[in-house]
Length: 263
Image (cartoon, rainbow, N blue to C red; front, top):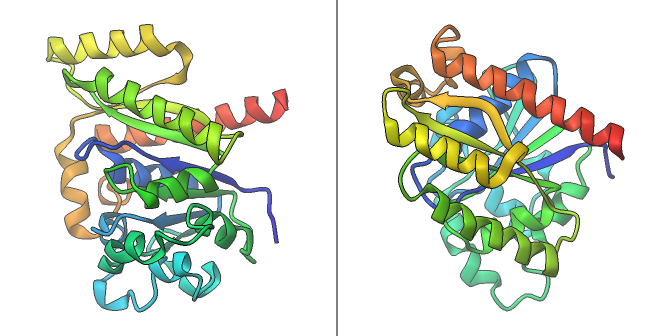
């Protein structure tokens, strides 16, 4: 059963760039303005699940079961403390996924197929990928319509970005011709740091309007929030980080509106 949902993969093959933080806070911000949102946690570390307060003991079924085809989305989904936001949690079982289905001809399309069977109408489905380019990320890119890339404002940012754009190109040519870049979001921005300012200007020069206007600042409250099992937006709505994620959500929605109008 296919719905008019937007499936966005949040990907960067480098760890520590604010990927999961972006996934849960963007999802929370979208839910806060009335969108029905589902996160699928595809990272074996399960940080998105933990950051949304899902106890490991409550993850009897997970995205692993979804990918193995033994459970549907509707059988794996859990509510979170955020109204309108649900999650398919992840477990360490995902570590074995690649080995177990390496020989299967449909190995790249497992997630895509599972998401086509959803009974509940979600307006946004956000896929949180592991920080590497493996079969889990490949499944996410094959299933999504667009990729949102969190990029840390640091010296090697552009190098990592060109690798990622190359990967997206390969996916487009091989398994998902309609995949596009939803946008690049610059994270962990420190206004006092000249290098960070330089990275922002380089990335904007290189990618123009693919880069969101919103900069996500380095923010203590945002980094504390996951240890309380809450998105920053619930933990401290007024902090600079939460405000930035709300701004980012409105930019994402504006882009989606423009895309629909152009289609």
